Length: 260
Image 1 (cartoon, helix red, strand yellow):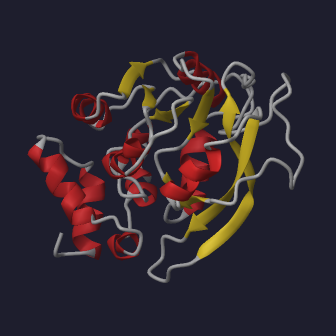
Image 2: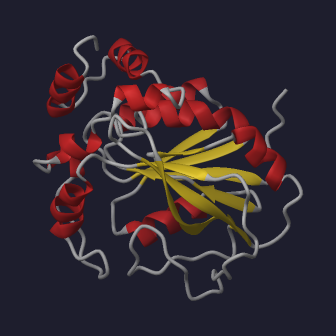
């Protein structure tokens, strides 16, 4: 029987995540929500059906609270999500990530009493050959009243209020899996390159409006099956809710996996 930690809130900031390399927002949330008593998802202007999906899931999962905010940068979005946290800790997860072994994660944080815990990030290749690339340690579990992200921040950064960590200390043994996009350079150039991610300049367009969006959002069904995600089942779930995938993603999935 799963006993979710009482002092931890799962927090996530999302934008246009109806489908992504991890199998989409529903697949990610459905995997993690049973392990958390509290969850906060902040939508920052989705236009692909993500917001409608969240409304449905909030009805299915009473611990899930959904909020909206104008996207003013990753730092402010993280801060806004954490402002809604009422527990001692916030656990920050992205929509294209998953805890590799949730039960091990729960066991690991049951007796945690520090200010933060860093997790090893493992990148899952989008190619048909499955492999995990080692990333650096990344602080994701933090005392929510002591973490404050700077405005000039890429997706994650250490802040000026003491959210610093020393490699090898306060680190979790359970890693996080980050599902990488196909042709990552296109996402870097076309999305992150559309605004200065180190300044206060804010992108004027939604990710779903970027021409190469389908390329770096389409999952590889064969890869995901090895991690327990059935893309076909996810598509049926979305269709039952009346939600339609981005046309470019649907076309790419039809080409790569005709059975879908």
